[in-house]
Image (cartoon, rainbow, N blue to C red; front, top):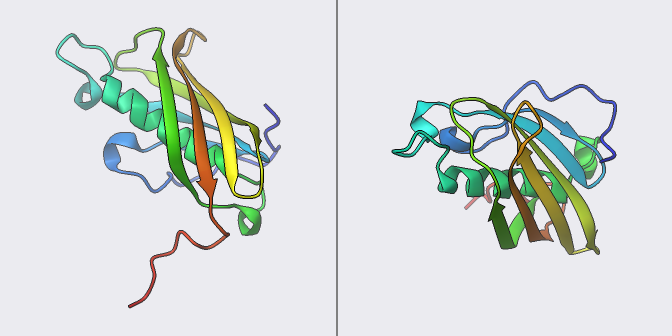
Length: 143
Protein backbone atom coordinates (compact mmCIF):
# COMPACT_ATOMS: atom_id res chain seq x y z
CA UNK A 1 0.00 0.00 0.00
CA UNK A 2 1.41 3.38 -1.00
CA UNK A 3 0.16 5.66 1.78
CA UNK A 4 1.32 9.24 1.94
CA UNK A 5 3.74 10.33 4.62
CA UNK A 6 1.13 12.85 5.75
CA UNK A 7 0.03 12.58 9.40
CA UNK A 8 -3.19 10.80 10.22
CA UNK A 9 -6.34 12.87 10.11
CA UNK A 10 -7.18 14.05 13.59
CA UNK A 11 -10.94 13.95 13.22
CA UNK A 12 -13.04 10.86 12.69
CA UNK A 13 -14.59 10.15 9.30
CA UNK A 14 -18.25 11.21 9.10
CA UNK A 15 -19.95 7.86 9.70
CA UNK A 16 -22.62 6.56 12.06
CA UNK A 17 -21.23 6.24 15.61
CA UNK A 18 -21.18 2.43 15.34
CA UNK A 19 -18.80 2.66 12.34
CA UNK A 20 -16.62 5.61 13.30
CA UNK A 21 -13.01 5.04 12.22
CA UNK A 22 -10.00 7.02 13.40
CA UNK A 23 -6.36 7.61 12.49
CA UNK A 24 -7.20 7.82 8.79
CA UNK A 25 -4.23 7.87 6.44
CA UNK A 26 -4.72 8.44 2.72
CA UNK A 27 -2.58 7.71 -0.27
CA UNK A 28 -3.56 7.86 -3.91
CA UNK A 29 -6.33 5.26 -4.16
CA UNK A 30 -5.59 3.68 -0.79
CA UNK A 31 -6.39 4.27 2.84
CA UNK A 32 -5.91 2.88 6.32
CA UNK A 33 -7.64 3.53 9.64
CA UNK A 34 -8.27 2.07 13.06
CA UNK A 35 -11.51 1.09 14.76
CA UNK A 36 -12.01 0.47 18.48
CA UNK A 37 -14.58 -2.29 18.87
CA UNK A 38 -16.51 -2.12 22.12
CA UNK A 39 -19.20 -4.12 23.88
CA UNK A 40 -21.89 -2.41 21.78
CA UNK A 41 -20.38 -3.93 18.60
CA UNK A 42 -20.38 -7.56 19.80
CA UNK A 43 -22.89 -10.33 19.20
CA UNK A 44 -24.29 -12.68 21.86
CA UNK A 45 -21.13 -14.82 21.66
CA UNK A 46 -18.90 -11.82 22.46
CA UNK A 47 -17.53 -11.60 18.91
CA UNK A 48 -17.59 -8.57 16.61
CA UNK A 49 -20.94 -8.61 14.79
CA UNK A 50 -20.75 -9.44 11.06
CA UNK A 51 -22.82 -6.39 10.21
CA UNK A 52 -20.23 -4.14 11.85
CA UNK A 53 -17.47 -5.87 9.89
CA UNK A 54 -19.40 -5.35 6.64
CA UNK A 55 -19.98 -1.69 7.49
CA UNK A 56 -16.28 -1.18 8.29
CA UNK A 57 -15.26 -2.75 4.98
CA UNK A 58 -17.65 -0.47 3.12
CA UNK A 59 -16.29 2.53 5.02
CA UNK A 60 -12.57 1.87 4.44
CA UNK A 61 -13.09 1.04 0.75
CA UNK A 62 -15.23 4.15 0.21
CA UNK A 63 -12.46 6.25 1.79
CA UNK A 64 -9.80 4.54 -0.33
CA UNK A 65 -11.70 4.61 -3.63
CA UNK A 66 -11.32 8.32 -4.33
CA UNK A 67 -8.56 8.94 -1.84
CA UNK A 68 -5.76 11.42 -2.33
CA UNK A 69 -3.42 13.12 0.16
CA UNK A 70 -4.60 16.50 -1.19
CA UNK A 71 -8.19 17.10 0.05
CA UNK A 72 -8.99 19.15 -3.09
CA UNK A 73 -8.37 16.07 -5.27
CA UNK A 74 -10.42 13.56 -3.24
CA UNK A 75 -13.49 12.06 -4.86
CA UNK A 76 -16.59 10.97 -3.00
CA UNK A 77 -17.57 7.37 -3.82
CA UNK A 78 -20.75 5.32 -3.79
CA UNK A 79 -20.73 1.54 -3.27
CA UNK A 80 -21.74 -0.47 -6.33
CA UNK A 81 -20.87 -3.93 -4.99
CA UNK A 82 -19.23 -5.48 -1.96
CA UNK A 83 -18.06 -9.07 -1.48
CA UNK A 84 -16.98 -10.06 2.03
CA UNK A 85 -15.05 -13.02 3.47
CA UNK A 86 -15.11 -13.64 7.23
CA UNK A 87 -11.79 -15.35 8.03
CA UNK A 88 -11.32 -14.76 11.77
CA UNK A 89 -13.03 -13.30 14.81
CA UNK A 90 -12.51 -10.23 16.95
CA UNK A 91 -13.78 -9.00 20.27
CA UNK A 92 -13.51 -5.80 22.29
CA UNK A 93 -10.23 -4.58 20.72
CA UNK A 94 -8.59 -2.16 18.29
CA UNK A 95 -8.75 -3.25 14.66
CA UNK A 96 -6.68 -2.11 11.69
CA UNK A 97 -8.38 -1.48 8.34
CA UNK A 98 -6.68 -1.12 4.94
CA UNK A 99 -7.96 -0.70 1.40
CA UNK A 100 -6.23 -0.39 -1.92
CA UNK A 101 -7.45 0.32 -5.43
CA UNK A 102 -6.79 -2.59 -7.80
CA UNK A 103 -8.21 -1.10 -11.00
CA UNK A 104 -10.83 1.08 -12.56
CA UNK A 105 -10.99 4.32 -14.46
CA UNK A 106 -12.41 7.84 -14.26
CA UNK A 107 -15.82 6.76 -12.94
CA UNK A 108 -15.32 3.39 -11.26
CA UNK A 109 -12.78 2.11 -8.78
CA UNK A 110 -12.19 -1.54 -7.81
CA UNK A 111 -10.69 -2.23 -4.39
CA UNK A 112 -9.48 -4.91 -2.02
CA UNK A 113 -9.53 -4.48 1.74
CA UNK A 114 -8.72 -6.29 4.94
CA UNK A 115 -9.31 -5.97 8.65
CA UNK A 116 -6.68 -7.30 11.07
CA UNK A 117 -6.23 -7.36 14.83
CA UNK A 118 -3.18 -5.94 16.64
CA UNK A 119 -1.27 -9.20 16.08
CA UNK A 120 -1.85 -9.00 12.31
CA UNK A 121 -4.30 -11.89 12.25
CA UNK A 122 -6.92 -11.39 9.54
CA UNK A 123 -10.52 -10.85 10.61
CA UNK A 124 -12.03 -10.28 7.15
CA UNK A 125 -11.15 -9.56 3.54
CA UNK A 126 -13.30 -7.88 0.91
CA UNK A 127 -13.51 -6.77 -2.69
CA UNK A 128 -15.69 -3.97 -3.94
CA UNK A 129 -16.60 -1.68 -6.81
CA UNK A 130 -17.28 2.02 -6.21
CA UNK A 131 -18.65 4.81 -8.37
CA UNK A 132 -16.43 7.91 -8.20
CA UNK A 133 -18.15 11.27 -7.93
CA UNK A 134 -16.64 14.70 -8.69
CA UNK A 135 -14.77 16.41 -5.84
CA UNK A 136 -17.22 18.31 -3.61
CA UNK A 137 -20.25 16.23 -4.65
CA UNK A 138 -20.62 14.80 -1.13
CA UNK A 139 -21.98 18.15 0.04
CA UNK A 140 -25.76 18.20 0.53
CA UNK A 141 -27.58 20.05 -2.22
CA UNK A 142 -29.39 23.25 -1.25
CA UNK A 143 -33.11 23.35 -2.07
